[in-house]
Image 1 (cartoon, rainbow, N blue to C red):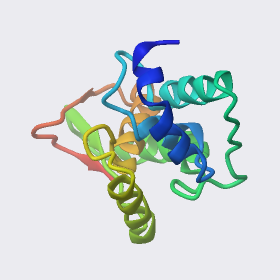
Image 2 (cartoon, one colour):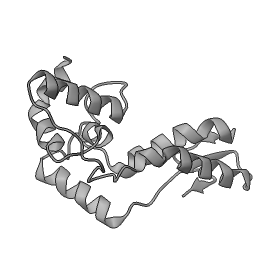
Image 3 (cartoon, rainbow, N blue to C red):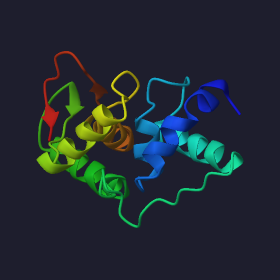
Length: 151
């Protein structure tokens, strides 16, 4: 078990006990571990919890992301289709969350003291949608001054 996993198991148990999916579990520790996706982090933390006899099943619908990650292919397709209609050299993906989702996530992060390690849901969604859409867009991603932002 990697050191960052074992160092964070108690906090991970508090997050996992709320029925969150692996994306949301991993995102609470986004600044831990190198070169991992939030999904991979969540899977590693859940496996670490299992190794220590703590078993937490995610709810059928994640109480934080409400299973938005299952819709990423559809979102990416919509982004690629819309960008075909616009000329530009670069782009960036952006999204707007339901205010209730953002509030629940923010409250959980604050309550569990995860402000130093967590990443917002919006950030992960934008990144994951962009990664899936990128091969269909034939333009580079521009974070600082994008010519087009796909919402």
